[in-house]
Length: 279
Image (tube, rainbow, N blue to C red):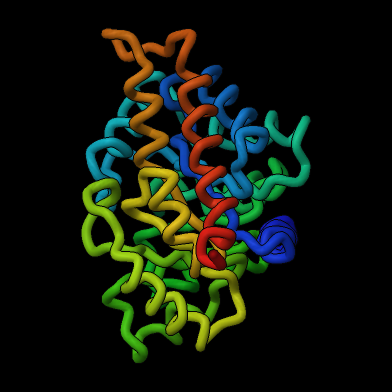
């Protein structure tokens, strides 16, 4: 089992700050540009990278991430290309954790055993599969853990104390707390409610708790980061990619820079979060 996730969260905790977890969709808007974006994320301030596995029906996603999957698929992206991106990234970065996030269908189509083998070989550290509940752990979660991948589970505002132990049972790496009910990128989190939820989850696990869904700005990232171990930003980054494209949806000379600048600003907010809380 890769320990890059554990080491990164531990390092951030030692620095008295949360981790910045950034989401981008693999292959958006094309393979070459997506790989360049991926390579630039750590230098811009990303501590952990969630790499979305493009899928035609991402049911938990709002319009921005749905559109990013469509752009990637229209450009011919496949699971094999997603794993190729990780392999290429690992040629120059052996420390930044990479988590593949998405839905079970593309993994099932690729083949569970082949996916686990190839993901570990590429340098993937963990997976988030949003449509596999704990009751289906035999299907993929347990084989993934046995094969060397962390399995990161989602907890939500509706995950009560009765349900939480089942959610946490086979979770490793970190817990991803979904700060709002509904789809990604559609609302802003309530920081007070998030703080209470993080505290409640931590009563049941020693794993870091990262909070996402609805975090768009450096100020929001700072507010969430005062109590969470990690802050996840996805739709805002995907929107920065979208807004940089030309009229035909192709990358421009500003695409990589737009992502780098936003992640740098988000990183500044995250790194200031505990300082602000102490003042």
